[in-house]
Image (cartoon, one colour):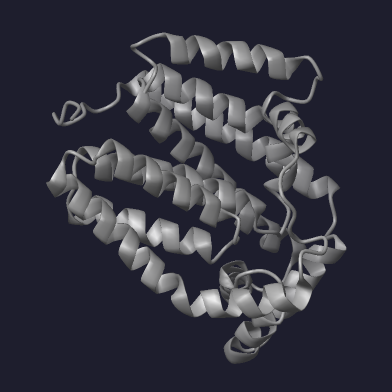
Length: 278
């Protein structure tokens, strides 16, 4: 296992740098918000979220998506009304939480400087800026998965109730936000189960936590099955193609067609160095 000594508090310059990154991120996303009206999909989500709770969940079950985002938007409208800029504040706040989570994850796996670089890259990513002000669940997926990665790393290194609860709640929320998160949750579970196969105590925490996640998803799994049977593959689900992966690499690499190669070289360099491989 890795070092379990407590992490020292970040120096003032790291905190100031992170706050500066978050301020720049917020300004870029508010600028995008002002220039972008609600789209058709966002209006549909709002109309579902406006319904009474029982009707909201019933409509969500007849959709193709899980209910968590509809419920979250419903709570947000009940808190502050239906002003367009108020509505779009919700995904912006979630996006900022995701950038902070990216810093925390980078710091946990490397150091504070690495965390700041990761947070700055996400703060300036044009695709993330655009979707951060959309009243859709995409930025919530990113934020939940970033924090889930951090929580599962904590559960692996320091097993106990707190990281287990955090991992469980984040995984449950992710599965009820977008069904495709199931692939990530399954991958994370497999990584932990394989890497911890000789450490029975930690493996017990790991398996037990994800067993609770699976049980919590069982009711929604029946809803998903009915949605999938009704919709089929359609436009809502298809297996990823090499072109899709290349497009995703371009999004992560700020768009230019030649940047995925640069990104691959940087990732390869990190994997080649023992100090950064994990």
